[in-house]
Picture (spheres, rainbow, N blue to C red):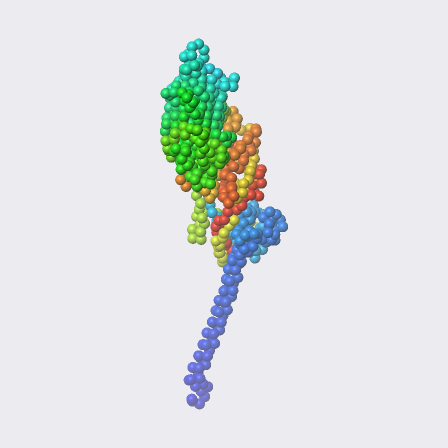
Length: 631
């Protein structure tokens, strides 16, 4: 170190290093301070969105029924009060209230967001329904013939006849026993809207022959020295069928080939025969009379009653039974239980036979179902799939069902209900969105985007949440532009005699309303259609339900479906659209108001307290939330 030198070289280097270190530490401290402040700010911002969604999805709100009286709301929550799911009705109320500018809901959400702006989007399971419908109005049965004389019936076209005296009689008119002793129709069906007798004179049978259509009787049908031959259609008897005195022993009294005989009563063949070649006999027996089928015994030279068919179906003692072979063999008997044909030996139902002399009867639960069953010949055929509610109305021709009034043919040719589930990665579902900017509801999309773009930060979070969905309103006002609209959806687990009131506006000459439903039960799925059509002549309505079992389908008018129209007001039972629930067999369903034409609006009102019985179904939803600062 030289004279006058303040620092040595080593000291100078040390001082420089110390200064550099102090500078570096100071700069690092400022940087750390800035980073820490930034981290704290980010954490606070991130918590705003997460905390807001936590409150919405994990709390029922205050009060818990805030969606029923929004004016008293202190905090918004979407959780169901009793189960760990989101409440669909609360979510719908929230989105609807914000969209409509409800200040009570908006202010509660603004407090929840800490005064920040936010956008809330919900994506739920989305249903799309497409159906191909047949709605054909039948203009009644024109050309009614009011007559009691078979000679006045046409012989080459469809004919419907009504006899004012009460009974229509096919019999020789006058003169010799052979005079006018036959009626033949080669061009159409014959429908008689009366109890009917076919009777010959002496030993000459009266012959009724149809070669181009069905034969239907709205009432009892009695044959005495007669032959009824139908070769191109079914025979329908809306009452009891009886054959008392055989006509020509060499010719069956009733002859069918390739078609069926439907009897909405009992069958009694004292002397004579019924031959159903390639077809089946259906005995609906609505009063569960015993026996359902009676076949007379032969006495000396007098023949008894005989019957031949491929398969015989009998409604008896509350059940449908099917016989596919020798009726005296238990293995040939089946019983319909919940739409499935079960061998009677496996059903727990009592089946036995009893013999008296040459007569052998078959008994069900101790009651005779077929008397003299040994005279019944069954050639064997496949079982016709139908459910236990199968009725004569499911098969009867329009002339009997409508008795001359206008009617409707309804059918769903195809129906496709698409369920689209939301996910984190791909939300192609439209969903619903609401936004609050400066504590005010905003619906303009451009305003929302401009506010986001000008913000220094935006925090985003989302939740995938289980949800309880139940669609119900005590009253709906339907308009054509908003259909299809889901009006009822959920599950019922007990029988309910629900009713719906439908009010149509006056002053409309022509219009229609169509309601559709889909449903599922433990045993089957299905769909139903109900249509109301207003014409210049009045109202026409109808219902058709299809139940889809694993191996077959059943379609027809729903059991216990009731529809009444008075002026422009209709009352309809829920059973027209939804099958009844049974013990341990709930029904999950959705009902849509599918189409409305001609009417500016229609009101539908629940008149049977469906809300009490309707329970929600479980679904998955996605909720997304964007939060940015207020400016």
